[in-house]
Length: 351
Image (cartoon, rainbow, N blue to C red; front, side):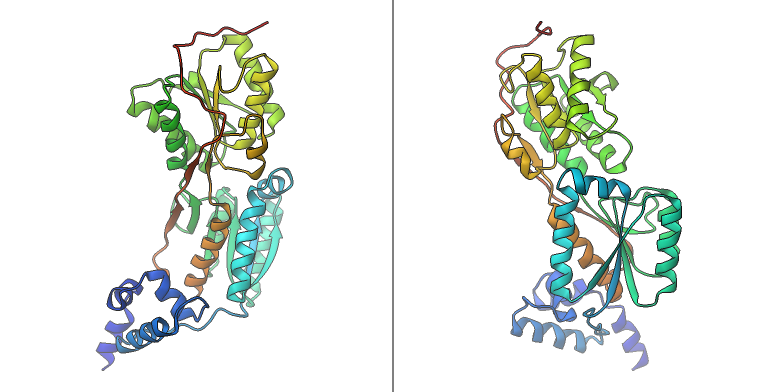
């Protein structure tokens, strides 16, 4: 009997899902006692779990988790709405699960040490979410906590911590492919460097261009010091004045820089998309109200927060091993800032 129970405890969620003919997420929700699972399905899952001696988890309702947000996340919260929507999705999911979320901002190493110490010493915290943090010291300290931790909108290159991000490389690939199909062969990529998630977008742009034998070297990359639209406009203006308009389209790593690029081009007398096409990535709500409305790639911001909490919940219940990297799919949003190339343009700056 002991041997059978030991074998049963190794039974995975996907085994139960296969036996019941449902998805793994349905099994997870049924075992956790969540709403939204039909009574007959819940009964089947519980009976199957019992039959294979699967250790049924306790509910996470009433548990408390810590949400650690970096300075970059808080700046974004004020400027744009990416972080806002991530938090909306997370908080809505927390309410459904009955989990209390305690937010802790961090601005420097002293703050990192403070929140790690609090998480370590306070037994009431069952797990931690870390939002938009890349610093190695913080990741290493979180990996040594001995409690479940999930990174949100970032990842751990050593895979010590589980993470949830959009599929940034795919997002940029989709955007670049759209421009290439419209006939663009010289596509400038504009970004603020520094974060791994943004490097993934640079990689996706490069993937698409190299697949078509197009130029994807450093001369086609424009780096900006910050995500502010005004800085994006200044960078594009300076580039065109110095080197001429040697590209027919701009793909930016974020909608805010696309906004700036459009402003800068229009201020120089160029028409978007008639002279230059511009594509963003994020699909921030304000992008639909630009002139012209911005074509972009939708990042599932709310789903990032909800999925990260679901993963943390599963880890708190002992259902999500080993550590994993979850990437959410993104999709193209067609608006008015991209047009087909009607000629091989060699446009010089207008006076």
